[in-house]
Length: 284
Image (tube, rainbow, N blue to C red; front, side, top):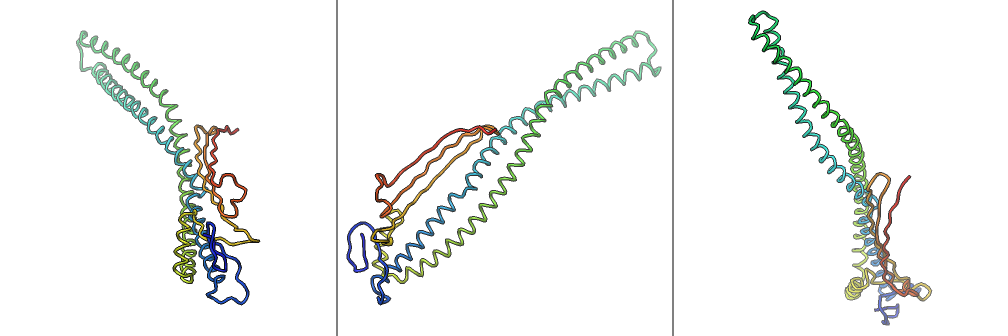
């Protein structure tokens, strides 16, 4: 429905012309100026809500959290393998200690004069030789495990440092988003209060018609006539996702939905469009 300042109606949306000089406070021109003020506040609130839901830091935060999740999973997997090797190393060290203790006990008896029988001394000497060989073999196994642990510990240290940096980035982005949301919510509250005050000056039947139009016309219930044409509205919503496979290689994708209405729609073959994009890049 199109409504001009004389009260005539035709078309698809409420419009208003500038108030004529000398009109009263309840004249059609004045009433529709108040309605346009309501529309301005509603548009501002819609824009603020969109801004709050599409903060650039939110996309960056999603990327950071995705990368952190990958690193956390990898670190858990590597740590599990490291723990298994650690258990094996501890078992070897325990066996080495037991063998050394037995060796020391035998040597103490052999050289302490506690055993005089040559047969028993020979048997003890043979056991000491076997213990030394066994200890050497155990130590070789431990060296192999230590060599396996070295790159694992290096990876855990590297990923730990990266995870720490990502956690700091996450905290920074969360704080930035929280501060932005507080500011935007304060603006929404201010615009909403001003909207309530402006709506109170609009006749209830006209306000109800405006609300119905806003529901069916993507948030636009009234628009100004500028040089005889409706200024109209342009609305757009976009979403994007960026995933880093490695530090230098990532893929991205996204889409933008846009809509034009009223005067701005003149000349458009399609008033509603969806523009997708996808790609990959390598950073040098």
